[in-house]
Image (cartoon, rainbow, N blue to C red; front, top):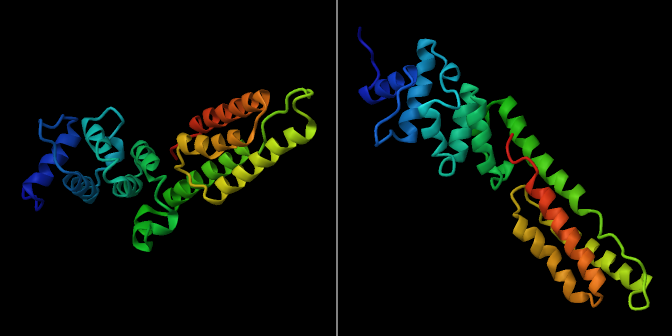
Length: 213
C-alpha cells in the first residue's frame, strides 16, 4: 500500500491509533498537529482516540503554555474538548480582538463562542464580586458613621479603577494590591479589620472562578 504521507507523520498517526507512548524525544507540536489533521483525510477521527489519558494528549498539553492559541485552534477543529479547555486557560491574557479572522474561521463559531463566553463570564463575575464594600462594624466613639462612609467611598473608588482596567486574567495579587492601599487612608483598627476580611473574601472568590471554557 502506498501512503503519500511523510514517514514522520505516519509514525505519529500510528502512535495515536495504537495508544503508544512516544519515546524520550516526543515529536514537535507541528508534527502532531499535521498528523491529527491528516488522519481526517482517511476518515479517522482523532476525537475518538485522544482521550485525556492518551499519551499523545499528555504531550499536546505540555505545549499548552507555549502554543495556547494553536492548540485551542487544533482542538476546536477536531472537536477535542478537553484539549481546548486546557488551552483556554492560557488564552485569558489574549484579547479577543487579537485573534485574526482566518484563525477564527479555523476555530469555528462554536469554540469562538465558548472562548468569548469565558472572557465575558470572568469579567462579569469579577464585577459582581468586588462591587459590595466591606461590611460596617458597630459604631463607636472612635469611629462614627461619617468615618465608615469614607471607607465605603474609598472602596468604590478602588473598585471603579479596577473595573476600568479589568482583564479576565487579572491575578489575585493585583486585586489585593488594588484594595490594600485603602488601608493607608484609615485610622480605625476595626475598619482595617473589616477591609482586610473583605479583600480576603474577594480574592478567595476570584480564585474559585472557572478559568476554562
